[in-house]
Amino acid sequence: MEKKKKVLFISQEIMPYMPENQISRISRNLPQGIQERGKEIRAFMPKYGIVNERRHQLHEVIRLSGMNIIIDDTDHSLVIKVASIQSARMQVYFIDNDDFFHRKSVMTNEKGQFFDDNDERTIFFARGVLETVKKLRWSPDIIHCHGWLTSIVPLYIKKSFREDPLFKETKVIYSIYDENFEPALNKNFAKKLAIDGITEEETKIIENPSYININKLAINLSDGIIYGDSKINPELEKYLIESGKPYLNFYNEETYIEAHSQFYDKILKNS
Image (cartoon, rainbow, N blue to C red):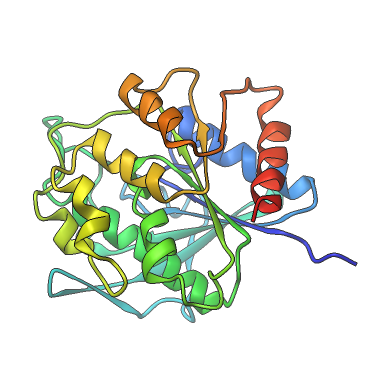
């Protein structure tokens, strides 16, 4: 009997823990739909300060917590929490850290200004998920990333973690949504995210770490791209088409889960 395929969902927002929007809605319904089609799933998101731990019954997973992630020579402790969406028979893991995720807003301060450390929050989240999956000894066939906060996951999988037996065969799919941020991330972003296996050549495209450029980086290192919205940034759309990467157009609410499932199978078959 063929082993169940495993899909890891990494998302910047998931309902009902975050307000409803395109990313949080797809990140809530897609894993359930994929699980119902016979695949094994895991889902991760950041534990932002606005997530109500009591209402959603989050609890710390002691055996997974306690690691430190070093960014720019500073240690940051990794805390893992988990909650269940009973109706979907699905667990969601949360990446938590006092420095990065306890403030009571998501990407901007009360004046609407982009947080200065969003670059390090991105790095911490991406590496936190991958280190936790290693601790779980869970080997995903596909990693599906949702939202720009996940844009460096393809780089880490294809370069830093490529020799790790758990990720050696893993395919990465990245969904591009109609989102944007300004100004660019910290100018030292490329230097800060560099760990073993990543060369300057690969990160050259994010010398200016703008929204456009970090998405181009994700396109470069993904095995497949999905339109998360009916419209995405025109420059990214042009870049994607010219890249020759397999991609899935936008599908409506009634059809997107089946379309995603078939796209996963196509990407796996191409391997």
